[in-house]
Length: 373
Image (cartoon, rainbow, N blue to C red; front, side, top):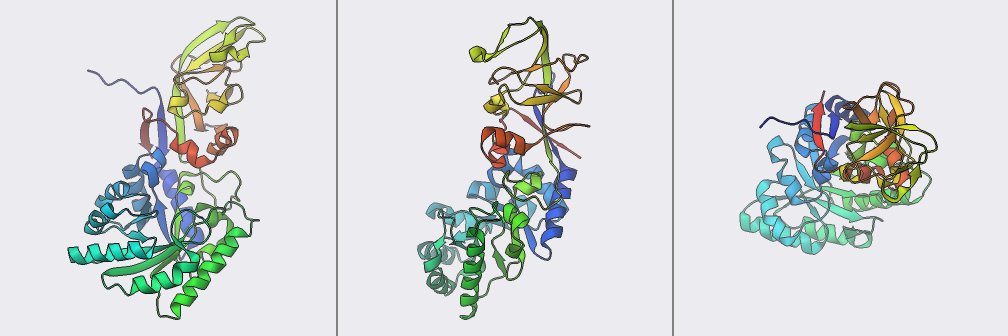
């Protein structure tokens, strides 16, 4: 059977990924950069993304859980689990050489016990909750917990890290308080001759908003969404990065419809005049937010075409009033740039009242991922 071209595809620019990595690395130098590739690299395809970033210079990768970590072993770079570890996950992670988070004294002892049984050393980073309120050693307990854990002989206590809940807001005092408290903890541990190879707190937002988060004693940063050329909608944009993804589909139908014709589910739009109407082969199952209904647009032949009616699961209807030469089969840019126009991830996030991470992660499974240079 002949291969049939996919109706919806996501173009991922390897050259833009490389550019964005280099822009981040240049900003935070001499800090090392950890590329965060959680959730299948935010749904973009973890192995092609990781291979591109390795070629760009990424020396280590961060993920959320063990299954994601094991996928990256072939790249021969350190892989960090950044969230938590369950008891049954510890042994395979030690066997694989994955860097494991310590989130409590109990978890440190369990990791140590397992490593001793395997006659291996476990590489660990202490995860400190300085204000996120989600995972990690509570700040008030951190000094005593780390002192006791570092005495366990089968642990290689390589690093210490924390995470920001509000680094997108440069005016908030929360992040600066976190940095201050974290640095104080590191200094207190130094008095006990406990020092770490890696000290890290900066995420993508902090790299843009808080330079002190990648200055001494910090020597490692973690970045995910900036690599794809996106920012938090509310944060400062101080790094010159470019969108690395474009969501595209095809123009499936063209019809001339009379004034007063109703469009789509709920008949939420009625034509005010005779209109050339197009239907494109993408809907919310492919990642188009439902909130684009009657207020978003797509780009056809480098011209904006307003979305009319409600976005459906598989199709979306647009006005072709300004694109008289549009033809069935034309490429349609739903997200990304053309010669003169651009639809950004942030603009979709604003319409949906969410953040760019959700937009990228919402692109559907049936959408083909194409990696272009």
